[in-house]
Structures are given as C-alpha cells and as structure tokens.
Amino acid sequence: MTRELLQVKGLSKRFKDREVVKGISFSIAEGSCAALIGPNGAGKTTTIRMLAGLLQPSGGSVVLLAEGRPVADPRPYIGYLPQMPVFYPWMTGAEFLLYSGELAGLTRREATRETGKWLDAVGLRDAGKRRIGGYSGGMKQRLGLAQALIHRPRLLILDEPVSALDPAGRKDVLTLLQRIRLETTVLFSTHVLHDAEEICDEILMMREGEIVLQGSLDHLRRTYSEPVIRLEVGGDEVSRAWLAAAGGKDFVVQSEISGGRAKLRVADVERAALELMADAVSRRVTIRTLEAGQSTLEDLFLKAVRS
Ligand SMILES: Nc1ncnc2c1ncn2[C@@H]1O[C@H](COP(=O)(O)OP(=O)(O)OP(=O)(O)O)[C@@H](O)[C@H]1O
Image 1: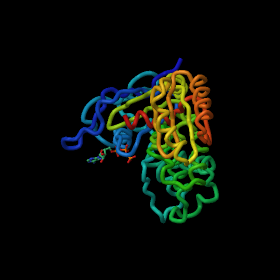
Image 2 (image 1 turned 120 degrees about the vertical axis):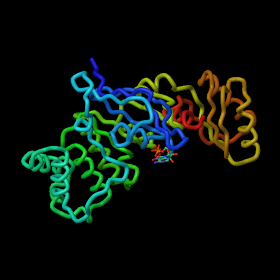
Image 3 (image 1 turned 180 degrees about the horizontal axis):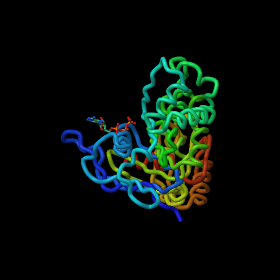
C-alpha cells in the first residue's frame, strides 16, 4: 500500500493584495516522483518555497508524515535545491559538502563519510578537490543535489533543476535524478513537459496559482488522449484553401489551422483520415503529411495552460 509522505491542503500565498497561490491541495506518496509543471509565473517557486519551509503561507497547511504521523519540524526530512543555488566559489566541492552536512546536523565524522559518498554518487570524486568557481553549470547542479541529499532526507524538493543547463549538463542531471528517485521521494518543478515525462510518475499541472490537472502520467495519458489528425499541405493556393475549409467538416470536433498545417480533433480517426484523403485527391490537393493518432500529453499541457 502506498503511504502519503506530504499532505498539502488549501495552501495559499498572497503578496500584498495579489494571491499567487490560490488554495491548492495535493498529496505526495512515499517513493513517488512528482513534477510540478506550469508556465512561467504559474506559482511553482512560491509553492515550493512554502513546502520547503522558506516562505510563510497565507493560508492552508503543509504536513509531512514520518511513519504515517505528522512531524512537528519537517526541515530534517526535506532536502532542497533552489532554482539559483549560491555557492562559495573559493570553497572546494568537498569543503562545501562537509560544511552543508554539518549545517544539516551531521557530526564531522558523519559529514566526512557522506561527503566522500556523495561526491562519488554525483560523479565529482576528482573535481571535489577543486574550487567550485571553476565548475560548469552541470557540475554545480550535481553538487547542489549532493548538498540537498547529504542528510538523507525523505523528500527531495528541486526547483527547476535543469532549466539553466546546456544539453550535456541537462542530460547528466536528469540521469542522476533517475537514479536518485529510486531511493528518495522527489518533487521537482519544471516548465518542460518532456523532463517531467522522463523522470516522474505523477504530474501536478499549475496555472495562475491553481492546480488545473493532477494524476499519474498513465492516468492522464489514458483519460485525456483524444483522436487527432495532423495534416500538412503544399504551399499552393488550392491546398491552402482546402485546408482552411477542412475544419468545417462534420467529423471534425475542433481544429487548429495555421501556415499549411492543421491539427484536427475528430470523432473517428479512421473515417476522418479516409474522407480527408479521398476529398484531397479529388480536388488535387497536395498532402505532404497526414498522421492519424492520439493527442499527446504535450497537447493536454498546452490546452491546460492556455484555456
Ligand atoms: N516576493 C514576491 N512579491 C511579489 N510578487 C511575487 C513575489 N514572488 C513571486 N511573485 C509573483 O508571484 C507569481 C508567481 O511566481 P513564481 O516565481 O512562484 O512562479 P513560477 O511558476 O515559479 O515561475 P518561473 O518559472 O518563472 O520561476 C509571479 O507573478 C511573481 O511575479
């Protein structure tokens, strides 16, 4: 049976007279990986800072459970990596981890042992002897992860952990997160759906301070995928005019058409594909691609954040 690790009820945050997090509720199960996903300004950082105990909520509650019971001070149970972690550039990676471990309440001996272990785990064994000032963005982020994990928290909270990285750094950190999530419950925010799909099993979609969709990736894919046809036609006038009128066919439920491309939500994908093909051939329309399938989570995400 899955056990809840974090329960969030009616959480809100108001800055002056503007409510940026509007009474959101969700829970995170032990062992899961949840992505808080939403466009810029949705309220992800504000939410995460409240969960990590760094920002006082205006209303609602955040409860962390250990062995099924609420804990009075959740801080020792949480590891946190902010969006823009700050490091002392003159420290070596090893010195920084030792310092972080002691700050988190480990004895010097424990901190020394864990420092060696985590430098290995995040692939910085040799670099650990060098100053952080010379690290790449990806190395700094991996050091940040080690810092957040050094006291063995039950919940790892990460704010946009890969957004600022180049493709190589991004891949390194995502691969590391895939390993970490096997041992630690993870919540991370992102505005990139692909990153969430790569690592997580739970999705919390946020928009304008509210959670507009939540559930497991599988559930969301099954529940919300709809039959769609994606079409691209030639640049000639006949083809473009035909495409513009395609949205009006009786089997089309909804259409998005622009620049020679269309995405048509339809009731019956096979019938729609056949009729479109037959009609296009009879009118000498140039079809470049016609793809019949299901809408993706990306479509759902775009719909949720735009509507
Ligand atoms: N200290 C603050 N005072 C006033 N407004 C704030 C403060 N912090 C955040 N906001 C506002 O709250 C809203 C949500 O911001 P937040 O940083 O939580 O969003 P986000 O989803 O994390 O976006 P991003 O991906 O850009 O970081 C924004 O409109 C922001 O301007």
